Amino acid sequence: MARYGMVIDETKCVGCHACRVACQNQNGLAEREFYNHLEEREYGAFPNYNREFVPVQCQHCDNPPCVKVCPTGASYKRKDGIVLVDKDRCIGCKYCIAACPYNVRIIKKEGYVEKCRFCLGFIEKGEKPACVTTCMTGVRVFGDLDDPNSEVSRLVVKQKLKQFKADLNTRPRIYYKRA
View 1 (cartoon, rainbow, N blue to C red):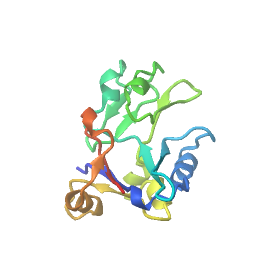
View 2: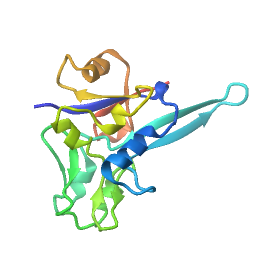
View 3: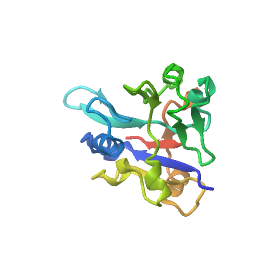
View 4: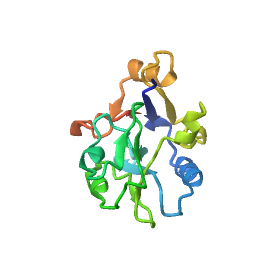
């Protein structure tokens, strides 16, 4: 069985927000709802000023705190590592929102919590998530971390990549190439 993950190359991100818009369109989200966002960081002083963008979304953790705190089992992790929310079991208590250190879950107006699903419908058809295919600069690489021939697996093995907030021991499946 596949073990899905992603590499995000921050050095390629230009801050266009195409990934967020593609996700919103794919998931029918309102203008102010999103499952991924860009954190903008500025550092240095003129003339050595720099700006970078860090794409952040559900990290589909191997040790997801959101799953541990869910009283109904609505937040769960599949065998392939994708963390999902069963909206029919969700009671909207928001424990998972509080437990998630990445601030990537939203409460829908219908009262249930939702988040990135790695565009599960696309994956099941052998396609890539919308945020990956829409990016004009190739920031995101998605695939099976257990397939040594997949691009994502090769990147994780060959490059010095970081995990966002790795010190929290959530063991994210999204790896970052930093500037």
